[in-house]
Length: 371
Image 1 (cartoon, rainbow, N blue to C red):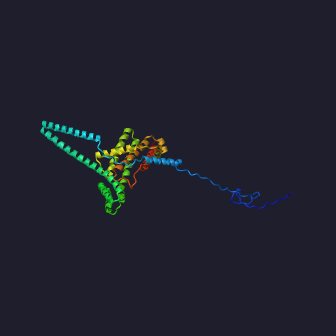
Image 2: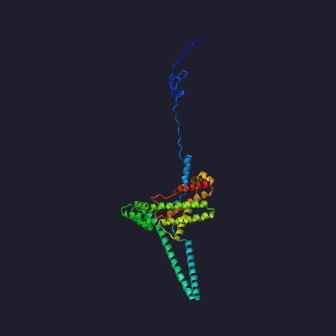
Image 3: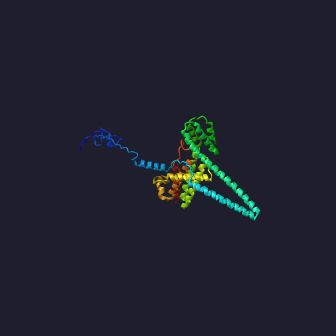
């Protein structure tokens, strides 16, 4: 005899939900209803705002930005020309040396005349040719110094015209600026545009702003490219040169060539004596403002942590020499530019760091691959 079984009660199941997520009133396999578990209760959180000076990452970025700004030299000023005892002594001994040379030439010509008359005439002719060449050289050097002094006077006149509300001085400054840049054919279109606008602008600051933007803006871009190219060459050559003496010689050579290029770019065109005086002013300004100080953070930013750990210290020295060349270029721009930086942005070290970092990183990657 078989026993009777109790029939199973019907139940509902959700196919798309797990067993533990069945809704309320939904039966399970054992016929019992399972309730939905209660959700998480909402909670509140307290957020603490960290100030920028307390954030270590912001502090590090601010420190690197401050180091970059400190590397940029302050605007260079033209030192006053005073009569000193050093100049007086050099002038006196220079004249004495000239008299000694003259007496030696006179004795030489007399001796040649005593030996043979035709030898004396040859000596006289050579002396005349030499004196003519010396006079031409002296005239060219004096003209170059006068051009350089005119650029310096133009800067002072521009600062005075900026403070004067009347446009008379400003128009005189713009006219002198166009005469300084007349030797550059690439500024012909800008000079023509300034002549067309002559008399239409009666505000002195606006007139000087237009002159600086139109006449000196393209030259400033070219000057930045010139400084950047010189900094790149110095960083590469000093990074691969085997001797420190070669580094010093090449840095000096590149600095002199950079100062000469910038002076010709802005229309000063100094001669040999003028170039030496201009170079002395640049070096004196950088010596007064302090030497370059590059922190470890900036070196790591330029070279990179991985590359810096594998390459030698020569790469870092090349970067520092390149930055030093950029500082010389910025100071030379201040002294050679006919107008001071007023409405256009003065270049800083941050303008050259990006390109130098790209070059250094590329050189480091190439050295790593070849190694």
